Image (cartoon, rainbow, N blue to C red):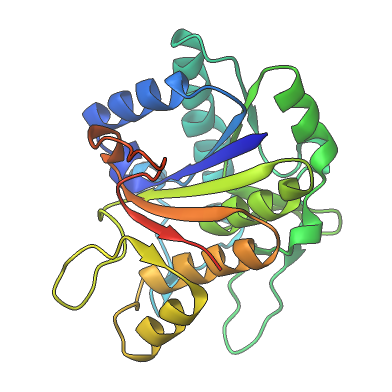
Length: 261
């Protein structure tokens, strides 16, 4: 059986019309599915109201104690429960989770190197405790994961939502054929002329990284995709936030970029 795992971020979360359309499409998908979400702009705006300034080094967020409290409230609370409620209204039984629930996603606190990123969790495929997630899926519930993991020594940790998505896809591949869908602000992976690349294998990916076509924010997303594929995921799609507007091909391929090994 195929398990579809969707990850959504700011492009969908921050725009009400996009979010409504996506959730309607997601709720209509038959079979087992999981939704993983990021934080969008809400944590930033809430932080400003609370007098908590964002801290970045080389474009990467530093999660100090105050920021961890903020993202726990916003990611694990406000955003997560709002998504669950809206899916319930669409007749899609859902349950909101973070990595601490049933120790479903264990992590280790990122070691301090040249930069101390603070309360940030790093993951490996074996960090996923699949039993709770499988129980939810088998009972007909859709897990909705916030980007928070759990370390028995450190507690809750802020964790990249793309990484959580990839780890879930790898871990649950033992029980399902897992397909991962990264939905963001482009229609897929683009070549140097801005044209969509519909299919990529590992060799293609390495070449595009070497020539600089895949770079910046796309690079960690593609690396997460490769890690998931190497750990057992069936395929990974990189799609635009409005992918649902395009028909699925006769072969079952979504409009976007499909990655396989």
